Amino acid sequence: MFAYVARQPIFDINRKVHAYEILFRDGEQNCFPDIAPDEATSKILTSTHLSLGIEEITNNKPAFINFHRDTLMFRFPTSLDPSAVVIEIVETVDVDDKLVAACQQISEMGYKLALDDYDTSGKWDPFLPYVSVIKIDITTVDHATIRDVVPLLQKQNIKLVAERIETYEEFNTFKDMGFDYFQGYFFARPEIVRHRKLGASKLAMLELIAASSSEKLDFAKLSAIIERDPSLTYLLLRFINNPLFNKRHQISSLKHALNYMGEVEVKKFVALLALANLSDGQPSELMQMSLLRAKFCELVSLELHLEENPPTGFLTGLLSMMDAMMEQDMEGLMQKVPVADEVKDALCGRQNLLFDCLAVVQHIEHGNWAGIKRFSAKHQLKQTLVHHFYNEAIKWARAMHSSVNSDG
Image 1 (cartoon, rainbow, N blue to C red):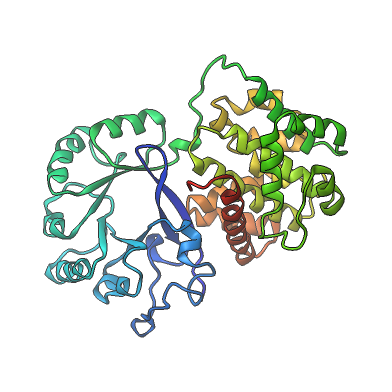
Image 2: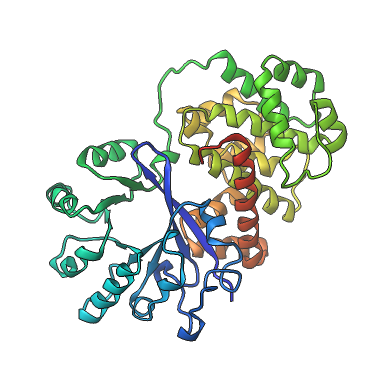
């Protein structure tokens, strides 16, 4: 049995990733799956149940994992490393003394417990001495009620997570209210800054993206742009020499890379380089997700026999968060970047095969399992293969991101 998973970032007040919530496809309500109690060994979340280790999925950040009543009663969480996980008690559990006692014992063993979708009801009060995190869905609890309850929870040294934060306005509102962490896709939605002028360095990056999406690579033009800025050459070589896929040859120049790797690979790296520069000053999760989507869309598009040169699947995934990075709307940006029409259409939400590739990775990110099923049926791909591609993309994105970014 393999548990297919998705992950959703949880941010701190500085928009840095603090943790990821893990959603299990084969568990009820995305919870940790039902497994026979005699399987509760220390290896429970290794290869038997996950095709990736938890630390690979979460980039060595804490993993928030939902547990329902039975798994808590059987003390399942105690087979996990207490420093790596936060145990979420889902809101649908039947509350009684036995469950409270089980949670007390789990807490006393050094585990952090969280209440999920806390509705401020008094039935949760017996858990409060053992809970270190409370998550509140801002779409289901009245905001005035939330405002009243925050100081009471803070007095008990409980950290607060605001869930379903979809705009920067909401992020700022709940940050000002005293919340510590934020979950939702606010960071991926652009705060549109009108009439923003693009500086010379940003325009150069758009030129690089255009070069990487052309059918024939203009080597002279590419070299001219990259050589204007020594840090670009340095970063490009760091990408290309990443040990994940280049173990044998130390590449020392753009020309060397072109001869050794070929045009398609170099185009991908040039686009990566441009995006890494464009994402400067934005939450690093934007770059991380762009990398993951790039690899995923590439793997899926090649499986669906889309052409490899230019690498349209890769570029669609890579550029899919460019609006959030550059704080401009995607339609306007696409007028400035001469990418292939099918990439442009997919990024602007117009239906085509690349749009489908992008839509399915978004289904995975949101734990929308029905959407993955529909995509797989439509394109006659096995769902297991789609999940395998996502796992491969996580690993690749993690390795690439470490080439650019040491702060995670």
